Structures are given as C-alpha cells and as structure tokens.
Length: 324
Length: 299
Image (cartoon, rainbow over all chains, first blue to last red; front, side, top):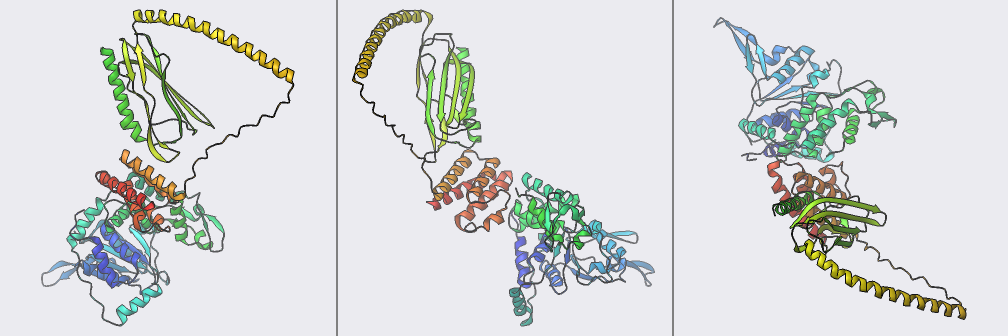
C-alpha cells in the first residue's frame, strides 16, 4: 500500500479540532473511504456541524449545511430552474446538495418528498433538474442528523430509506475530561482552523486502496453469519430493564438486508485501511457491526413495551456469533 | 530388474510424499515411545518367495492413529502389499504395519530403519526415533536347499540336547518337591515386590506454555500454510487462556497480553491468519520470529 498521504493523517487533523466523539470521526472517515453516507442520532450541540465543516476544510472541499424544516421543498435541496429575463431562457441554479460534504440537519423534520429527494440523490449521485441530469461532486458524503429528544412534528424515516445510509451512529455526550478539554480549547482561546492535510484526489486513491483491502473467506462467512442472525435470532436472549429474559426473535419483525452484508464488508475494509493494513481482521467487522446493522433491523412494538434498548439486542446478536 | 526399479521408484515416491505431504500437513503427536522395532518373518527369504517386513510400535498413549511414521526404503524388493493395524487400549497403543515384499535376486539386503517423528511426551521435545536396521540374506532355491540340509542336521542335534536337559530338570524338580514335603517347613509369606512406577514428570505452567509455543513454532516452520497459521493462532490463544470466539482486541485486553513480545506475537499470528496470499510467506516469517522471541522470553 503506497499512499502518499494516509487516511490516518486526516483523522489526526480532525482529532485536533474535535474533542472526543471518536465514533463520529471514524464514521465520517469510513463513509468517505467506503463512498457512503452516515446517519447520526443524538442531541444538539455535540460538534456534528463542526466535524463536517472540519472534514471539508481538511480536504479543501466544499461544505454545505441544510436545515430540514417542515416547509422545505425538494428544489430547495437539489436546485431549480429560474427564468432569466435578460436571456429570455431558463437557467439552472444548483442546490446546496452540490458539495463534497453535506450536513442534512434534522432530516426527520422535512416531509417525505424532501427526504426522498435527498435519499435519491445520495443513491444515484446525480440529480435531474428540468431536462438535464447533473452529477454530484466526487467525493460526496452526506451526514444526516436526527434529534431523538424532540419528536414533535417529525416525519420518521422509513426503513427502506434508512437502509441507504451506510451506518448509523448514536452520538453521546462527552465525558467529564473531554468536556474540560472542550472548555480549554474553545472557551479560552480562538479555535484553530483545520489545515488542509489531503486533497480530493487523495480521497479517490484511498477509496481505491480500501476497495483492494483483502477480506479473508473466514471473515466473509463471519459477515454473512452476523447478518443472518438478525433474520433468525431464535437462540439469542436479552434482558429487559426490568430483568425479564426475552427472546431476541420476538422483538424483531424483519432482519437486515443484503445491503447490510455489503456495508459490513465495505466498512471493515475502510477500517483496516484507516489502521494502516491492507487486510481486514475480525475486529474490523465486529467494530462496524452495530453501526451497520442498527438502522436496518425492523424492531416491533415489544421493544418499547418491554423497555429493551435496540442496541442491547444488536449487541447480544453480535456476541452470539463467535469471531473466526 | 525393471520391476525392482519400479518398486524402488514407487517406494521412493511414497516416502517423499509421506515426508513432504502428510508429515508436514499434520501436527506432531505427543507420544511416549515404549518400543519401535523392525523385523521380518524370515531373515533368509528365498528368491521369488514373498515374505513380510514388520514394523511394530508401542506407545503409552491411547491414540486412534499414528502419523509421521515413515517406512524404510525397500529398494531391491518388490512391494506386494501393506497392512496396518492400530490397537488402542487404556494402557497404550500398539501399531503394527506388515509389508509384504518379494526379492527377485539373491544376495544380502540391508533394510534401513523405519523412522517416527513425534513430540516426546517425557520431556516435551520434538524427536525422531529409529528402529533397528534389518540385514536380509536372500537365497536362490539351490543354495537354500544346501543351507536347509545343514540347518536340518544342526536342528536334529539341538533337539536331542534339549530333550536331555528337560529330563534332567524334571528329575531335579521332583527331588526338590519330595525334600520340601518331608521337611513340612512353614511357608513364609511371599512379600509382594513393590512395583515402582516412574511418575510422569509434572511440567510447570511456564514449562507447559514454553512447550506449547515450541510445538507451535515447529508446526509453523514445517507447514507454511494458512491453515497451519490458523491452527497455531488457535493453539497460542488457548495457551494464554483465550477462547476461539474472541477477537484480537478481546485477547489484547487480557492481563499481560497487551504489551511486549506477547502482543507482537498475537498481532503477527493474526496477520498470518487473515492476510492475502502474497503476503502470507512474510507474515509466517514474522510469526515464527515472534514465536521464537516469545519462547525466549519465557525462559
């Protein structure tokens, strides 16, 4: 693996600006290496915007933030055609989605047709405005956020739409030590701008290198087993908050799709590259299993009535499959 | 002559396959060798008359099969058949291989020793055992007849001498019995001779681990394949108390595993188990070096 600049350099540069939130940083980089998108769920004020802006700055790429609201229209995202009176013709105005790093803030606040427009663009990597199709820039990473605390007036994303995100990260509050560091770094002095550590061409070559990372047959079988157990989790038991033992299969309506299998392999490759390896390990697969699976499993009402966390069920299923 | 040459080639090929294929593909067994003998049902076979060369191995362990046993090169003999028998019981295992051969010309043949490679369970070291060699004198029909006549005369004299000795012994035994009955002496209780068993040496935990690492190194050097690397990785994990279902990160979190030569060894073994084929030789070299360093750190 002869790369002029390593993905780890980008990670280290971002880590100098963002305190903690290691899982968010890693998710952003993995999405970049795997050509995917990230869904973040967590309360506001946890440096999500800063992470995206810093990533774009570190790559000398474009960054756009779209605040999703109930009155947002698809054209507000993808762009529209306006009539130019001087030229007496329609001109295309590209929307904010035309950027290398896009933060779709509170994606569940916009109605379904706006969500669809964004998700279609994420999948197709191009948008059609009027008669012409426009390719989105490369690299193109969308980081969409959802606020779990304030669900009034929101439109839940259907599972089929969520499946298009490569991974879903639950963003938590920083630790006490991290919060002290945040105070030192941001409240007492001016924030240091992120310097450019790589180019968009570097990202493209990293992506090619990630694609070439070796995944052993044993690991492939492990990945398939991990996805298969989400569809047939009869042998897996979990404990509710009240201490009742429940069968995981009774909490799940449907398991992850083959897209989850592909996502696991992509993410494991990306994580190996991030660690400077050109072969993946069981640790890579296990580390990305929960983020790759948690938004692809259809849990039923019993999850809420029995007061069981979805992550507890997912962790139990992952633990039930022995690593190779 | 042509048949001899064919037989030699077949046997040489079989021996080579056994040495490079089967021998390397299998882990050495831990055995306590009690006897390992090469014999023949006759030391003076006749030309064109089949005879048997027999390899007998007795080990203390109860095993289902014996691996890494190599037959001698039976050059100048034509191989007609081969029969193996392994009998196990709680006291050990008896392995017997009967090779049916035939010689097509007279003269002396020296059959080289059979060999066995195994880990000596007594001291935990890999060793090679050899049987005795076997000098065979092949006779043509005419010389066999002449030899047979001479041998018959000698046998006749020997039988007469043996009969006389038996007679003398019987008379002596009868006289002794009469003498003892007439004395009516109380019979002293016969003290049973205490049988002392040599206890198997108990290895310390460090010794055991060193032995396991030495075995792993031996296996990986002999068989530089992915499957051997995976087996060695599993053996090392078991040696440090980790289970098969754990990942490297889990194992490195165990006390004492996250630093130093053991960490290097675990990382090297992980690489050899999961890297791509082109990188495998280098990964196995690194794993062998790490095994050596770790074994050295245990002394």
